[in-house]
Picture 1 (spheres, rainbow, N blue to C red):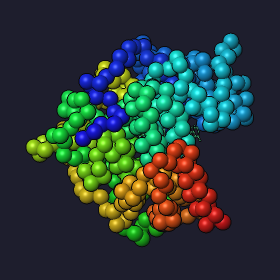
Picture 2: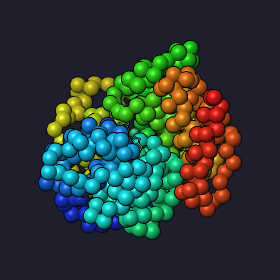
Picture 3: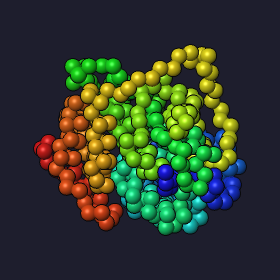
Picture 4: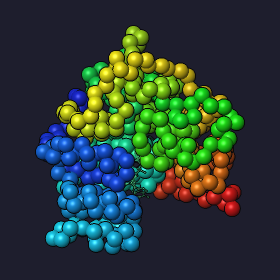
Length: 405
Ligand code: NAD
Ligand code: MG
């Protein structure tokens, strides 16, 4: 096994505390949880920059608490609103527009970047952090799906490292530590990603045909942003995560399995060639993988109820139903098809999720749209760069929206 971008103990570069942190997507679910970890361990971090989308109010509160010198938002209207909400005597630089996130990701004073913007919008900022040699705590799985090859290449060239925040990949990282020294893993057989199964596990096609956005947004175990909640309901989240695992750990897609585990206590497993399976268990709270990736190799205490297996009682596991939830199969097929098909899969999924949330398509239309987009795509040449992949992303969005008009 080749480990491309995760950090292995033997390769750990010095990263003294306090670490200077930039949070991209600070106003989202992951960003808020990350700042709770920071607030619990203020001696470990200096917050240098915070970036949100359009939520000026929440960003102003976070900025007032952490006092970073640089902020970023999506547009001028949000920047003006934000400036008016900041406390007197505190005047950080406020960047606006998509380029601001890339600037923040590469700030010379920043050594740790939490990439937690949702969707393809996180790709260029993550790539900028990789090119700038940063330690990247990566929540934005879509950037690895869209352009994992380019991010890996940028990390190899710059010495940047990626530490997975996604709970399954963080679990794998923890179960691999100490086994995969020096980037070789001959004793590794496969990775097993667990999935909650989402809110519609066990339902039939007739039920799925009529589900509403509100039902899809109601995840049984995790509290998350809207897009990833719908992705969990379609199992596309697991599909994206299979690709994320392949990109992070360098395994072919056939050696990454998915196991539905409705209790969300076992966060993933690694199977070695002797048949041993090593798992990571914990309560379903993203502060655990966030803190692990921000502090690695240090472990820190977190104020939350501990896992009590006697209380949980029963852990169950079953195979995913790829017939009823075709998004998982589509993601694996896209990864096997070419290096640009995953970019199209991701773009089509973002469009389909938006259309579903705005009531313009049904839940079962989501995989149909994605399949149409994948069928239309001709693989890009091997040397495709970020602009080429983003052009394929834009083209996919345009054509799917034109189909709906
Ligand atoms: P969210 O919707 O709660 O937050 C998204 C953040 O990105 C917000 O700060 C928002 O303002 C910002 N944003 C949105 N669009 C943007 C744009 N175009 N440009 C710049 N910023 C923009 O999402 P989330 O649930 O926190 O998820 C963030 C990422 O983390 C996603 O990639 C998701 O897949 C991943 N992730 C989330 C969880 C979770 O528990 N929430 C778990 C694992 C992985
Ligand atoms: Mg996950």
